Amino acid sequence: MASGTLTIEGVRQTPQVLLYVATAVLAGLAGYAVRKFAAEAKVRSAGEQAASILEQARRDAESRVREALVEAKEEAVRLRQEAEQELKERRYELQRLERRLAHKEEGLDRRLSQLERKEESLSRQAAELDRRRAEVEELLRQQRQELERISGLSAEEARQHLLKKVESEVRHDMAVMIREIEQEAKEEAEKRARNIIGLAIQRFAADHASEATVSVVTLPSDDMKGRIIGREGRNIRTLEALTGIDLIIDDTPEAVVLSGFDPVRREIARVALEKLIADGRIHPARIEEMVEKARREVEANIREEGEQACLAVGIHGLHPELVKLLGRLKYRFSYGQNVLKHSIEVAHLAGMMAAELGCDVKVARRAGLLHDIGKAVDHETEGTHVKIGIDLLRRYRESPDVIHAMACHHGDFEPQSVEAMLVTAADAVSAARPGARRESLGNYIKRLERLEAIANSFEGVEKSYAIQAGRELRIMVKPEKIDDDAAVIMARDIVKRIESELQYPGQIKVTVIRETRAVEYAK
Image (cartoon, rainbow, N blue to C red; front, side):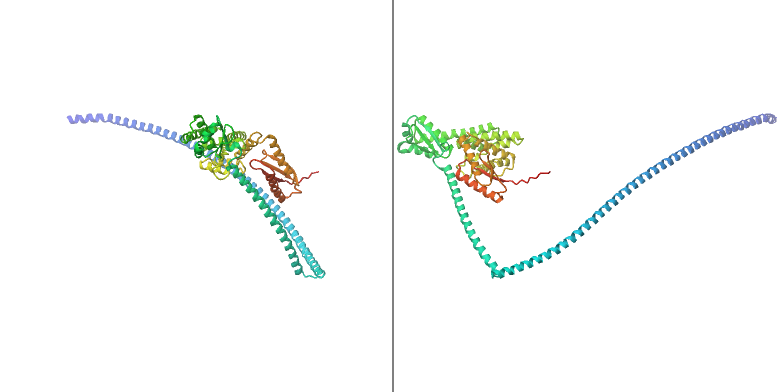
């Protein structure tokens, strides 16, 4: 019963379950339909959106394609225009080259035709010359035959006769020339020998030019002369042996003369003798002591004078030995002019001129101060003071510019720098100006006038000028009367006249100038 009851209950509940199932199925179908519709709507919307995007992409692609085509066309047009322009320029250049080649071909053709005409003309001239040469040779042959017939001599005999005559005349001329050359050589040798002897006497003789080789010491009384001489002359012999200076004691009242070439030794002797006279004790031991003391004082004074000279000129770094040699120049005189003062003056002049010209002032001053340094020891060393100075400056490592400027101041070397010429000019100004040396203004002017008079006395001289304070003589000659060879001979003859007729310090340069001028007027 129970199971039957359940079955009936189950039967009674089945439609309700089915309803529920049907409702659920319908609801699922409805949901499915709704979802399907929504999905289809989304699909349609996505498709429409995709179509829109594709359409937009297509339109963009077409737009870009059109733009790219336009740009490509523009670039193609530009490249075409450039190619056409380049082609046009090349075509123009080719045309220009063709025109030039054509012009050159025409010029070459003209030159070729001219050369052909000249060649034809030269051929005709050569033929004419050959013809005339043959005529001349024929005339010469006929004349030679006629001369042989008239003279009775053959050509070979006449030639031998002429050669003998010319040889005789040439031998005579050669003999005359040889005699003249020998005579000139003898005269020149004698003159140079006199100059050498005079130079030796000037540098080594005992008495000449009192300022150069003699000093005078004043005595308080003549009784001092006997004390200086000493017993049997031992005092004077000791003093002379120690100083190397000759003492001359003669009848000159209250004076003793010191004679010697070395100015420093002479100054040492003078100072020592004055000290002995002031001390009053004169004997060999005292003399030796005073001479040594005087030597130290003079050496100190020499060094001080050299330093003062360098300070006055503004020169630094000079070798101590050169400073001492400069100080020695205080006791050296040249034609009455103190050489140290002259050197300082030359240094100042050269420095001022170098400053005005924008040159090396230090080199000019240094070379000016040292230009006569060789005179400090020229009585001890062989050679001119220029050569001695060059050796000294090289030994003490002076610069080549200073050595060159110093070496050129007497014209021994050709100046290669402005400073060298300035030192030469300053030396001439300092030494040759009136009053600087023992030559009066009247004698100075007369010497210059005599120089010009000697030059003007030669035939063919147009003008003459004595320049550089009489150290150079420049002569203008007439070119139609004096040729180049005659100018050389004239310069030598004038030098000989000057050497034989004038007395002058240093040397004189003679320059003969021959100038030819061609003048025309355009009308």
